[in-house]
Length: 221
Image 1 (cartoon, one colour):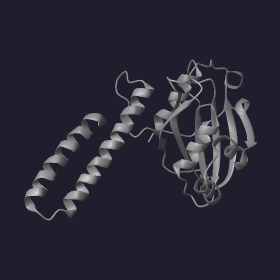
Image 2: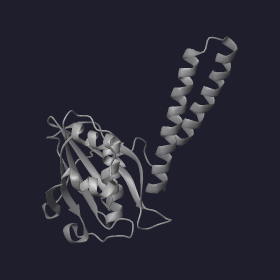
Image 3: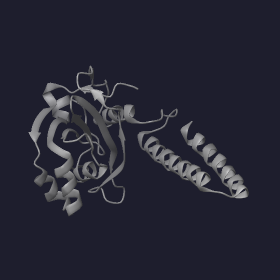
């Protein structure tokens, strides 16, 4: 796996603890979501602010800033609903670092302004690294021309499949979503084969499974 831990410059340090109540003010969470925050999250810190004045990179309309949040977890588990609510509360692209018992995991969704309403943000599925020792060496931020290119470089190592030649970030994210969809369809089909007792039906489902695997291979390659 490519390195996913970056050494964010000291000039971008923000280091502000974010009370859970501040997130609640922006997303009006139900009881179940509040319980997730209480049960799974110990502390939220707005760790770094990557902006033109802190990293000397030009902003773009889709990426005016990038925020790095660290979440210290209580039991190593975190539902994506928690992250999505923070993404909804903060009107900038976010990258999360989860911390638990000396380990770190990087997780982020691709976040972009809505084409229908520039004031709203569209948040993709989440992409994540494996858990890594907290002392894993961090690499310097890549040399790029603007914050949008930096955002792409921060997300790229989290993607489960390499980029195609000339594939833009949004296209790659959409293909990753299609991969996940096809993988779920394959798993469901395999489950149906296991449960099916009739030989003729097994043959039919096997043919369906082969077709799904071909479709999956097409979006993977």
